[in-house]
Length: 234
Image (cartoon, rainbow, N blue to C red; front, side, top):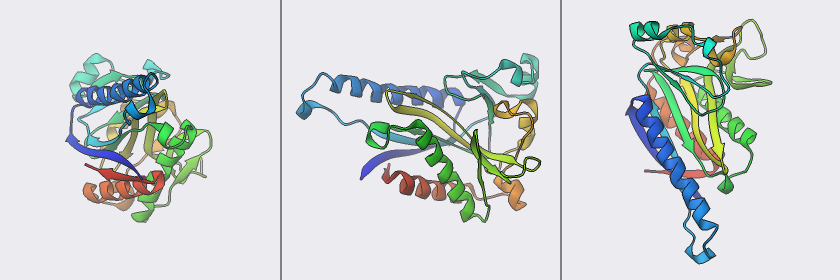
């Protein structure tokens, strides 16, 4: 069984976590490139990583996103104490903040399955399974990445977890943002994921009160380990 090196970074500035991701990502890429020129007995195995964290208030804009989906100017961002990062993941704009479980799986998919869509669907399934453990039924909307509640009702559908990744040479980075105890008012300053006609929600909102983040993390770890058939170490 393949091992995944797990770290809970706690509350961490977005820039610091992005720097860490880029370093781990590049280490894996470099190892794969070096292995191409080495005999089998000299090749080094790549390492998979899973990072959990929360961020201070920040908006991130994916490479395919539109700047116009941020509804605040620079002064508005300063007034609200929110950072803004244009980054290299897929997807549009989203919000990260306290009470949101952010997960960054940096996986070498050559050791899992070389299928980005399957990778995203597996991440979604882990969130769906976690929500089920808390008594919440969730699903998907065809053509839209993410995990949704009341997914089949266009008037009630609301997103509880957003996803955006980058992959190169079958190595992934970035990941998911799962609203647990998130202050949803910060989504009012963006067009979340570029989707204007759908709302957002959180586990706390759906359950009517704060949720133990540690319980959510533990369930997510179980779901991810099971679905990817890996052992989390760290």
